[in-house]
Image 1 (cartoon, helix red, strand yellow):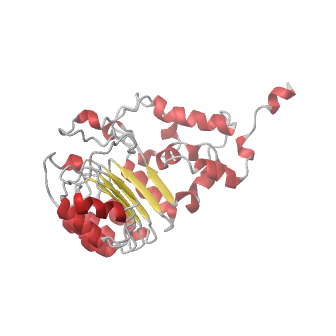
Image 2: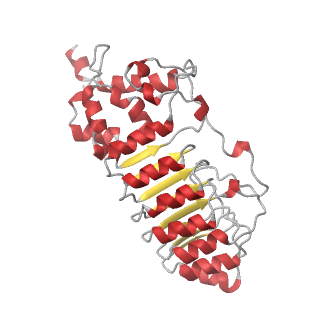
Image 3: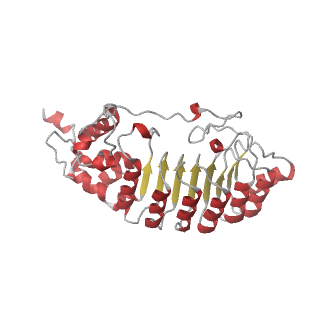
Length: 325
C-alpha cells in the first residue's frame, strides 16, 4: 500500500519556481479560466507579474461560442503584468482600445503578434506604435493595414528587427502594389528578418527593400507572384540575403495554413475549430466578469472543466481543496 502511495506526488509540494515554470507554459486563457482556481498557492503564483511577461491569447477563433470575453481577459492579463510585458499574441479579437491600453502600460514591449484582428484599425495601430519604441518584432497576419500605418510603425519603432506581414486574404489574388514594400524600405532600415507571404510587391518593390534594408538576412517572398527573380536582381538577392524563400517555394513549413493556393482562398483555408461542453464550477469560482452569461453553457464541459479537472489531478487536490480566490 505504501509503495502505491509513493507512486503519487503532491504537486503542491513542488518549489514555487518550478510550479511557476510549469504554469507559464499554459496560455493566458487556460491560466485565467482554470489553473489559478486549483488552490490558493497556484492562485498566488498566477498573480505574480513575472508570470505575465509573455501573454499568449491563443484561441480556436469561434468567439461567438465562447462563454467568456477574451478582450476583458486580455485587459486583466495586461494589468497583472504591472508594466513588465515583453511579448503578446492576440488572435481573432482585439480593438483599438485594447491595443492602446497595452501600449500605454507596456513601454518595454518587444514583440507584438496580431492574427485576424479585424477590429483594429489603421489609426489604432498607428497610435499604439507611437508608444512602443522598444518594439523589435511585429507580426501581422490577415489584418487590414495601410502604407500610412506601416510608415508610422517604422518611424516610431526604430529598433524593429523582424517584421512578418501576411495580408493575402485581405487582398484579391491578382492585386499588384508596392505600397507595403516601399513603406518597409523607407522606414525600417534595421530589419534582419522580413516575411511578406502572398504580398503584391513587384521587382521594383523588392529593389527598394534591398536598398533600404541593408542588414536584412532573411527574406520570405513565398507566393509573391509578381516578383520575377532573375538576372542581376536574383544575383543581388543571393549575395545579400543569407536565407531567401522564393515566390514558388513550398509553404509546408509555414506556421499555419497560408491560405494561398494560386487561385484565391476559401473558408476551408482557415478552419475555425469548435469548443464544446459545459462547466458550472468556473462560474462558482468568482469569474463572472469574464463570461457572457446570456449564452447556453451546455456545450463547454470538455473545454473548461476538462482542463480544470486535469489541473486538480496534477495538484493532488480533492473536493474539499482550497479554492481561495
